[in-house]
Amino acid sequence: MKRNIVIATLTAAALAGGTVAAFAVGDDEKAAAARPGAGGANVQVVDDRDDDATDDRSDDAAEDRTAVRAGGVTAAEAIAAALRHTSGTVVSAELDDDGGDAGTWGVDVVRDDGAEYGVEVSADGKVLDAQRDTDEESDSEDRAELAALKGAKFDARDAALAAAAKGAVTEVGGDDENGAVVWGVETVKDGVTSEWAVALDTGKVTKVTAD
Image (tube, rainbow, N blue to C red; front, side):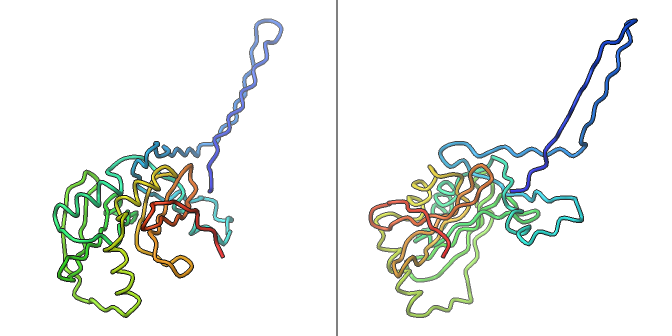
């Protein structure tokens, strides 16, 4: 995570005759990021870019999402709002961190008749829009994953609640982990993004490590 550190040094010396000299050196650049609270308080992800043109580190893009600010509904609350509007099985929910839509949630719901809807939930928990996905294409793997998610003892909301102890949940969705269907959950805590696998049958949360 890139941090802009404000450094201030103040030196004061009392000289003979009551003369005082003071020197201060300050950096005008200031940065602040409120960390998400316990229990998975929702976040809006914003960019924290280095203004130094000489900084050419290759991992800039990955670090852009490390500054967060608290506010808005949690993943679990967004999922609940989407289901109140469009009943079915939530297969994914993701916090939008782009431009004017930042802070809203995109929740994908598959209804009992198989129709898939994208439901947009605002930062204050209101459903803004719900559109049917007309480009529905699925193969045998997709159908098997959907069947597993529909029959899961722990649904997307449960997975979000389980992973909230690890940080602010920014994404949850069906995933394949070592050949097994799980809930894949992304969290942010203290500027660090982590990925977790939540078991469909037990709700056990396991950290996902890079291959």
